[in-house]
Length: 301
Image (cartoon, rainbow, N blue to C red; front, side):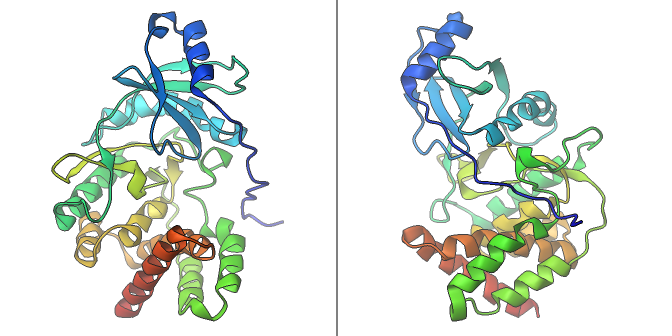
């Protein structure tokens, strides 16, 4: 029997609209019933996000699998927030199913900022070191009793082989245009982990790193895939957003050894391969990232 986790079928997403959220809030939190509700722009895939007044957001999972993270976030985000150098979401209340919505949900305080973009980062090296400091602080928190990898976070923190099937299909779809990607992937799969559990975020992506008006890192959001295990998944951002100088500063600041760096490169490659095999602007950007992964890998060899 394989020790590789099974991702199972794709989640069956539900739909949520602002009227449902108003009814949920009115029934369960009457003190907020008169606050306006409106969708958050680019509110995400795993969760539907709505402004609740000016200072809060309602966050509603879009499928049963994503709803598994609600209890985890309610339990652990207040603990993590008190030990981290940047603001992170802190739950204010937990909602119940209702108004034809079937899952638990959460209310959080609103964190100001805009999703990070390479063109808006004022100082790429400073941004990289600030992010490294944040992840170092996260890794330093006691992992005892923390959530192990599972369906609640799509097995982030577990073996990269969980995603081998997806990667192999994407490699086949790219055919002769994948360059050294297959070698990079096999190297990542073979890179050992020492088995020491630490806290990780699980989805350190541009949309979850908020910038302030000056272009500096201001907050880190969306801890739905957080847990304790192998933190290499948090390194993918080194290839998907950081500049070459920023990537080097990021690695040095976190003191990442070669096996972990190879696994992190594998996480970045998996994300990029799956997107590259599609069509459209997102795929074009992913192919640009893929070229950067190839270049960085070749320079390391």
